[in-house]
Structures are given as structure tokens and as C-alpha cells.
Image: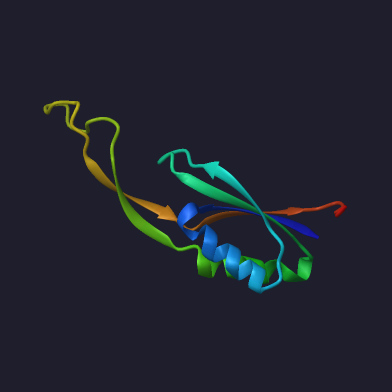
Length: 109
């Protein structure tokens, strides 16, 4: 058995949740927040048998899109200009960060 922990962007949470239910895969959703953009994330904890790991990884890959997004920088990048003017910068967001961990035992009460 494996524990799959997937950190995804909130925008992809509902779609991934629906697809996991359709595939009869149980998951626990936890609210979390990102570091760089300080944006909302959702962490899915999914316990599955070893033979279903690839299926779950594929569902995550298909439903959690990476995208480009603009954000303002917290500091000015040009010292000759007023440092209080934020500059928009393009960043890569979305997708999924996934950890697959071995599980010694699993109990449901």
C-alpha cells in the first residue's frame, strides 16, 4: 500500500476530486497555502494499493494543469526607479507536486 500526497492549486481541486470519486478512489482533502505566491493550495492524501498508484498518478497529471500567471514583484528590480512601484512578472503555477510514500499499515474504523 502507498500514501500519495498531492499538493495542487485550488483551481484544480474540484475537478480532481470529482475524477477520483468517479474512479472509486478515496481521498482526504486538506487546505494548505503556497510559499512563493502565498496562494491557496489543496493537499490530497490518497491511500491506494500498489497496483493502483500509476492510475492515480495519471488522474492527477491529466486534471492538474500547469499555467502561466502574472503577479507583482514585492520589490523593485531597477534601483534607478522608485522602489515602491511593483512590477508584474510571469510565473509558472499549477500542476501538482506529488509524493508517493510506503505505508506500513492502514486501518479504517
